[in-house]
Image 1 (cartoon, protein in one colour):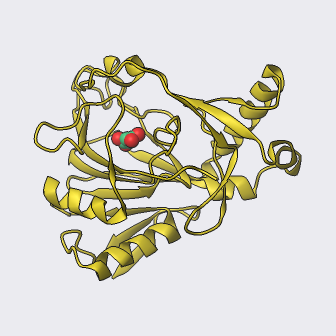
Image 2 (cartoon, helix red, strand yellow; image 1 turned 180 degrees about the vertical axis):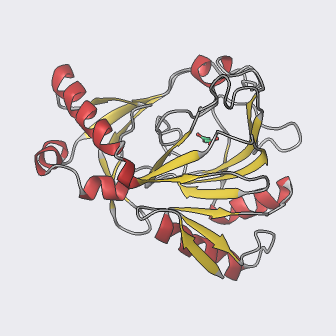
Length: 275
Ligand code: SIN
């Protein structure tokens, strides 16, 4: 097995593991690597939807997305499509997936189906380092505080993306989570707010909450907490959605990358209630 670190902050590209191998030993190794590097990447893994589902089930029960319709034959998989003429793609600013849910996603497995010749890399950021390096005054301010995370409604998820289909759900969801959560497997502290879904820190007035969140979001965007993955076809990224944030870069600019299609298959595994 060969492990190449993607950056000094997080991420590793793994060679010598076959994702089709469904033995317990193989899955345990993958989980160990995931906990160590937070996001792991595999190339040339031509796994079928069934094999992707099988791999995902090792981490726990599968989650259905609240707004996006699953694939016809594989409802557990959602297909993320950026069409040729679309400028935007799903997940295009920093976020933690579905943090507005009571039990936000534990792990995501994303497989590339069609990759543009340029553009559409995915970036990941390490929220343990973000907590460790946070200003001590802010750490004191947010100690034992909770924040409200809200979904943006169905429109923000699918109506904006021409090629993706909603599942008909129009409800909005809000849940409170600790601003600093503890990782259930490693015991490490994680800065658990994100600029896409976190709306307010409870126990602060609106101005104080807005100012504090603004400062935290800016800190979370530091490039030295990140890594960036350039996709190739049949690549797989597995990330720990509890300790990271990510964004799919929408650098499809006219005259450069616009006019390309990008297709990914995504499976999510249910998480637990952040503590
Ligand atoms: C996501 O935000 O879940 C998808 C990221 C990507 O497509 O790169």
